[in-house]
Image 1: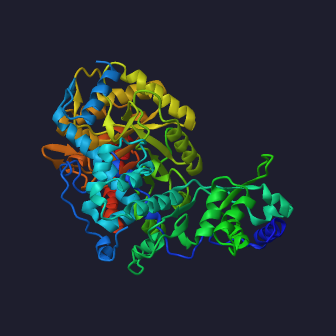
Image 2: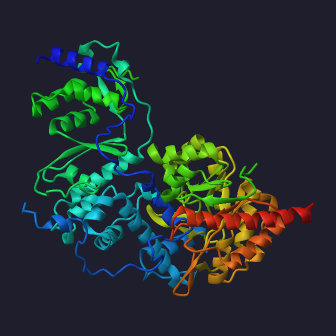
Image 3: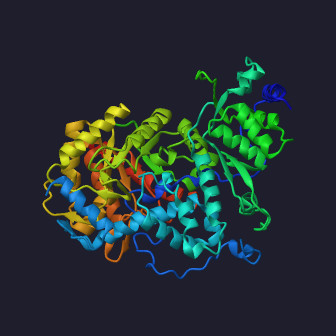
Length: 80
Length: 247
Length: 280
């Protein structure tokens, strides 16, 4: 396609495009809802809301293994 | 003691528990503040990087986030604004090296977060191009909505991973690299040619150059349709001709 | 007018409850949210504007850090200004706290040392914020776990003086006075007595928890009997005021918090009708 033809098609496509009522790509489910945006609640009035408020977290020695959804996929991971 | 001296002494004890408790009463209780500062950031990161947290579990995540928080002074009082460099930290975090996809998933989480929280901006309707000749698109530049975020992994199926964490099927981690776009709370997987086109536009390339970037990846790419989608979705917030005139 | 909140009990609205509140529109006199959660746009701001259409709203900042040494964060202040313009709240408040020093942020509300220079420093910052927002700011006392040697003024006296110098309003957190009484031995009734009634535009009550011998202001428990007694004393002295119930941690279902709110609302209404009879 030459440049002029390409641009003609592109312009026509834009002018033919209606404005989507959702104004967003609604092909997939939500990334997250309104409840997601509340991190600043966690420090209101000088406290922490992580359950163990104000207690120190574990000391700096690494003793953790992944225990989330990655475990379901772990057996399938091939070396890069 | 002056005001500045007192704050400086307090800050020194927050940074280093062995600092001199100059003029501070009950200095042993400073650990509550150190813990609060740390836990507040760790909790916020868990919210922002929800897919990463789901992948590794809460305990592993909190421990990893703690290492990050301790290594990275906060750059904002707004917890929503923290975490931009967490993906890079994860990429270099030895205990996570068995999960080589984790850093790219963190980039995806950050993109979703930016898209979700971006400032509102007025969309330019498709009809705004009505007065233009096709040749004008050669030099026309678009401003894309800050709520449109692009993310791509060379190796890992980010769209499949995201779908999995929203109730979809378990992802095959070896399915190969994927690109996706996020617009507010919605997202979709896109082919590499579309990613290249939108990325070029986002970086300020004129429309023609962006279309050519897509066609260089896939010479049968429906670039007109993809351009139309941007306008139809309200993802274009400004158009500017080469001479700098904006609307 | 320092604030235009109704003289009834209000409730802190936290993100996990926003959808339930939008769906059920409960009978709550007014809501308060943390300003920073609504910096930016999209769904969070849209939901806040929807709530604002039906209820009076208070914007409560947790991140400006009025007490920090050096300039305030210009971007943060601009974001707050933009939010205030969008939402047109009935009250705007910030804490008497600092959160940044030598380029580094501390994501907590750190108490200001009430030593030489504190009044001029805070008065200047409050005046600056009021200039930018073009409205009065309410300033709130915070909880403290440590004290400073050589303090020159009490917290209540400091708030009164800042009001006198800047015209700002006062947001009196009774739980914080109580926590400071437990940790540092201050007398909460004396703090309350130091505050000019006309400047008190809002009251906060919440619960605290003990950790290793320190009373920590977690907002994670029911309001204590001691704090309710302080509320009775304060309303008796000041007359009817907007009273906010805050709950941040151990946040359960909305229905559970709503029951606690209704109890407080009833308590406040009874007190205030008594107060009105007394003062009438």
